[in-house]
Image (tube, rainbow, N blue to C red):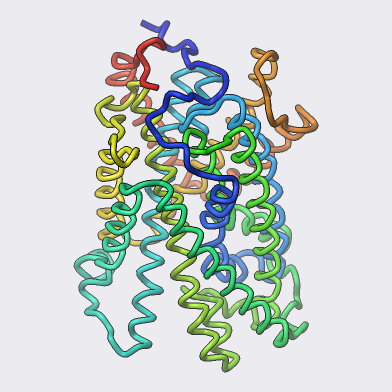
Amino acid sequence: MFRKLLRKKAIGQPSTNSLLRRSLSTFDITLMGIGAIIGAGVFVLTGVAAATTAGPAVVISYAIAGIASMFAALAYAELAASVGGSGSAYSYAYAGFGELMAWIIGWNLLLEYLMAVSTVAIGWSGYVNNLLEAMHIPLPASITIDPFSGGVINLLAVFIIILLSILLSIGIKQSARFNAVIVFIKLMTIAVFVCVATTEVNVINWHPFFPFGWTGVMQGAALVFFAYIGFDALSTSVEEAINPQYSVPFGIIISLIICTLIYIIVSGLLTGIVPYHTLNVRSPVSDALLRLGHTTMGGIIAAGAIAGLTTVMLVMFYGLTRICLAISRDGLLPIALARINPETHTPIRIIVISGILIALIAGFVPINHAAELVNIGTLAAFTFVCGGVMMLRLTHPELPRPFRLPLNPLIPVLGMLSCLYLMLQLPAITWWRFIIWTLIGIVVYFLYGLSHSLPLDKKIK
């Protein structure tokens, strides 16, 4: 029975037999990366991290989280180009560490993506509700707040998930075009903020620069790490990229560099225009501009935030469905889920089921509970991806590597150490929930996955 725990995953170039349609260009994938990474980090987390953990030194927190992400991104780039597949860290763990470890990573990735999309949907609904109130067309509290917060259902959050489910079901190229338009709006919004904020900087607001000390900076890095997890979703696009060996590594690395620079610039300006302790609000960027009397600009930023959060949900939702597809193909989840619609070339069954789960979480769960498990699952996945690069270099040195991670094994080791260090900065309750969820996953594997796992020659291509 335990022979099935041995590695069975095919290792080599991405499959050309997939029913998924290859339609994503390098430009599409890069914009998907920007769409996934730039969102809650700029419009929400910057203020929270500055006010509660790092102060003006939040710029350093973003730099540290960005460097840790870059170590992992380089590992993702090599494995995406060489191992391929739509399963992201799940597929890489399968190739490097075997089925059981791959399932544990995949199980945690599913929770990470479900919670991430749900969290952003709740934040999106808050921004839309604020905009409607500003336009004097407020919605009843009963349909904009979850039951635990005094309402009945967060209908706006449910609404956006339904729309994104429809868009993803229609086709990935249509989704990529929609993402490109929204990313352009988002970048223009950020440019407006930078231009306005540059004229309002008061250096007094940067003193003290380390109000919470170095410990606060590192806690801030663990908190804002949520802002970077979107690049993981790009590695699930291998089977739908026109030239995956080039496009996926390029898109991952370039989008992460661009977004890290944007985060550092915006966080530096934001803490320079208002005192850091005033930024612990739902919409810190627009709130800061309103404080300075820029009413119109504040409204533009709010609209840009809505656009930004929309693309984050879209790409993360996309990544969730492709990881679920990869796991289902291997039989560890019901194989019926892996059916690709022949007309749209999308896994509609997975999209619908995932959409229902996300809508239920977003509609009925408070945002703080939805967000708590996201970071630790991502950091764990990044740790194994970095380890997977070193493992496959030893076990399969002959594997074609169109992109090779430089300074091996230094960068993978630094990636593992930095991710583990950030994990240690997270609260104990987050660790306990992570451990409990992982134990549940192990039980599911031995009760279902082990007996339903397909042999290599029967896996769906």
